[in-house]
Image 1 (cartoon, helix red, strand yellow):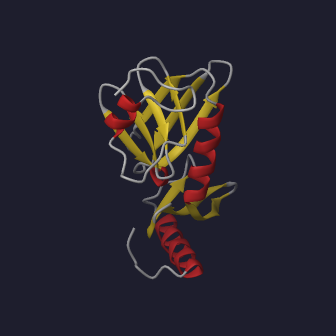
Image 2 (image 1 turned 90 degrees about the horizontal axis):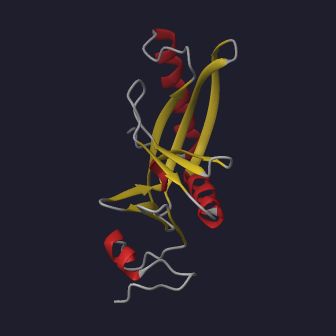
Length: 174
């Protein structure tokens, strides 16, 4: 294996450390100095001291700050608990940023907003891996909405049932 790489390919040693599936290809990549970010059809893979695989359907947000050249990637989490997040300072990440936007968006099967109080409420979101499989369902609550309040619990359950029915998901699992 060579330590050198063509500008259009991630280094072979980095790809090997990423542990990609046999037919999983790197579509975009960038290095932040300490880590490599590899984007594939299925996941964003962070290769550094440790390797972290973030399937696209588990990426809650990817925020780019152009002034600071910083990317912050946050994982889906549970309400009221800290979400895992990662920050990178990147040069020339355009292709990777495009891939992140496209893949995260493609993982969303359905997203519906529901108002509870004024302009505040929650969203029901169903996401699926690009490989298919079951839909993962979640609620995202606006600031000031208590998900344990009985009216909110009832509305969230009704909204989830309706969203599942609309997409033909009768599995009944979250």
